[in-house]
Length: 238
Image (cartoon, rainbow, N blue to C red; front, side):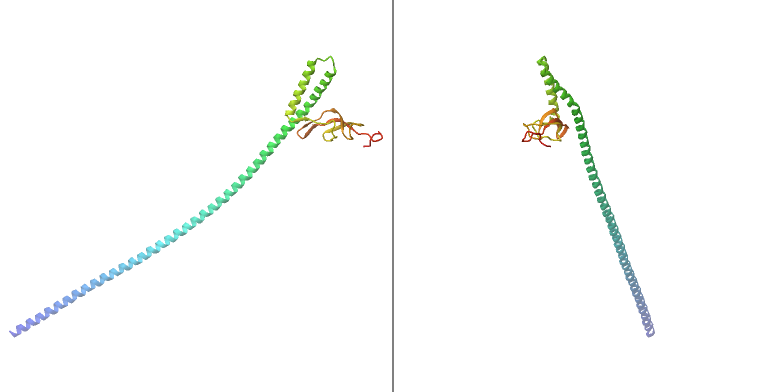
């Protein structure tokens, strides 16, 4: 019986060692699994961090590229704006220059047209003045003829008056001559005569009336000019 007890004790010891070894093996296996899981988790976290860093770097690079592209676009727009302003200034300057040239052209054209009209009027009036002279001579002739009917004299005088009125509307006026100082611009001397009634150099008679249009002399008056007399009654020297 003692030997059987001993055998049983040895068997239990063996079983206990076997169980202990199995427990240790299980614990070792479990520890390895935990370690592997921890290492896997750490590797994943490291990969995630590295991936996040790469994503951030990519995002930063993209943002930098976008900012650079935006700056380049702004610079291009600024350049186009400056060019547009330059073109606008040139166009405005050209427009103002063209407008000034057109205004000058219009003013010159108006002046030329006015000058042409004025010369045409002057030529027409100058051509009509001999008719006025003939009307005045006809009036003097009829007045000196006692046989001329009064109606004829009145009719010719009326025609001459109407003619002169129309000339006056056009700006034509007769030149004052008799009793005024001789003016070489408005008067044309055809004779000189001694006169005790008029100072030397005054117009004493008018042979043909002159006319002016505004400030321009259309035809000077043909006049006789006084030379005056000296104290001894002789002719004064010129």
